[in-house]
Structure formats: C-alpha cells, structure tokens
Amino acid sequence: MAKKPASRVLRILWWLVLLTSGAHALAVAGLLNAMNRCGEGDSLVSPLLYLPPQGWLLPLGVLFPLALFVCRWAVALHALAAGLVLMGFMNFHSLPRNYQQPAFATNELLTVITANFGQRTVKSLQPFIEEMAPDVIAFQEKTYRKKAFDRDYTCYTVKVIGEFTLASKLPIQAAALVPDLAFENRPVAARFELEYLGRRIALYSVHMPTPRAFLNVWRWRRIIAETLAGGGYFDPENRRDFKYYWDERFWLARGLLAVLEKEKLPTLVVGDFNTPDHGELYRLFAGRYTDSFALVGEGYGFTFPANAHVPVAGFRPWLRLDYQFADANWEILDCEVEPLIRAQHLAVAAAYRLKK
Image (cartoon, rainbow, N blue to C red):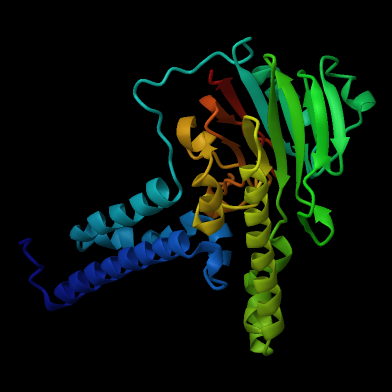
C-alpha cells in the first residue's frame, strides 16, 4: 500500500482528494449508465442526452491538479472517468484491422449522402458532393427545385415531396410520403423507389421532430428563474408537454419500423433522426438495421451542432443525430461525415454494394 503523508493535514487532504475522485468516477459511471439504459424513457434523464458529455469531466479541472500534488492514486480514477466519457459514452469508433477503404464514385458502389439543410445552402455542400460524387443525395427540411439544382449538378434527377428532396443519378421510379406518420401535421418520412443495377431498391428519407422546443425549459437561466417562481421543468404543464413529445417520438419510431418491416425491396433508411446514439430510440433502429457509421466509420461521427461555439465541447459538434441505416441486403463499405463547416447539421456519406 502506498505510503500516506505524515502530516495530519496532508493525510486528511489525501483522503479527501481520493474519496472525492472516487465519488466523481462513480457518479459519472452511474449517470452514463442511466442515460444508456433509460434514455428517452425517463423524463428526468432524457434531456441529459443532448448536453455535451465533456461537461461531466469539468470537476477534473480542480481534482486533477490536486491529485498530482496530493494523491496520485486519484489520477487513475480520473483516467477511468475520462475514458468512460471520451471513449465509451461518446462512442469513439475504430476501424477493423483488415479494413480497406474503397474508392468512392466507382461503378460497383452506390454512394449516398444524407443532409439536413436547415439554415444552410446547397452551395455549402458542394465540396463534399464533389469529393464523394454521390449517386443519391437525400435532403431534409428544405426543398430544391430541379431548375435551381441543375445550375451546378446537371447529372441528377430531382424529386421533391413535402420537405424531402431527392437528387439521384439513378432513375426514380416512385416517390411518396410515408402515410399516417406525422408529428403535428408534419410528415416525418418519405419513400423513394430507385432502379439500381437492374433491380429496384427503396430509400427512406427521415426527419424526426426536434426536441428543441421541449428542451428549452432546461436552459439553466430559465429553469432557475422559473423554478424559483414555482415553474420551470418541474411545472406539471411542462412535464406533460415533455411526456407528450417523447410518447409521440416512440409512436413515430415504432410506426416507421412497422412500415419498414413490410418493405420487400433492399432498403436504406437515411436522414435526421434527432436521436443521439444512446437510449431506447436509437436501439429500436440499430437493433434491426445496421448503423453504417458504427460499422465502418472512424472517430466520433458527430453531426450536430456544427455551428455552436461551446467551449466545453471544444467548439465542435457533440451529437450524432444523422444516420444511414442499411438492411441485410447491403454490404457497407465506408461511411464518412462532412468536414466541419458552419451549419446546423453535417452531411453523412456512405458507400454500399448490393449483395447478390
């Protein structure tokens, strides 16, 4: 056992730093476990899913220097807490040893980009489009008419339905909103049927409703002021609104999965799911379809918010809300996130090969 300091004051400080560091590591582990297991199913835990995870390590700014000078045993506890957050909960993805990155834009591959275009223009995506040379681009939240899109991309056929725009080099055989799935009269998904290598395939473009309006009650200034006045998050009406949103989200997710289960064609499901890669909603989809980035992506793959300037998150995105899911008919070869640019959402590109 390590020798404790001789001075009574130093001995007390030694134990205090060790116990505080241990309590912090246990609190981080318990909190991350609760967010993973409960997620959106618990109205108290669900807002925490959208906060920068690095924030749970802020106490180390005080504890770590103390540990270096007083109790170096505590450094191991700090490393454990940091590893749980930065490598575990934030899902750092590493590629398999035998992985070989394919070349995009080859005749063998189907390359798909999904992009939520709220608060940005098609011009801002042009470098990523030119790099990936996608066969299909699925836009959400904005519509682009063919005349406007053809100014830069003459080789695509553009189909607009509701808020969903599909630009495709492949023939578009059918397009329709997914029926009976809407949040406050806004459809959340569209189905496109394409012809690829002589076969029909189905691509679903998804935009689940954002929880932003319901999470606003968690803004610290507002919640403190309203709670002191008897309101805030703990106000019964706010709690009802929050429960209403999550009940609707589960209903929409299960409804979309029920539609997908009836799909007979090889299927890709792409878009803005407004769901972090933790919790029950993500597991509903990842349990039945393959998350392309989780399989062959590298790094964190965060796509939101790319236009935020939050110091604790390193001035970078901290949520993965945009996904590409594939069914068992596809071989997933690569998946990449758009380089950082000033936008709400970063686009995601993936390359697929249809299994014979």
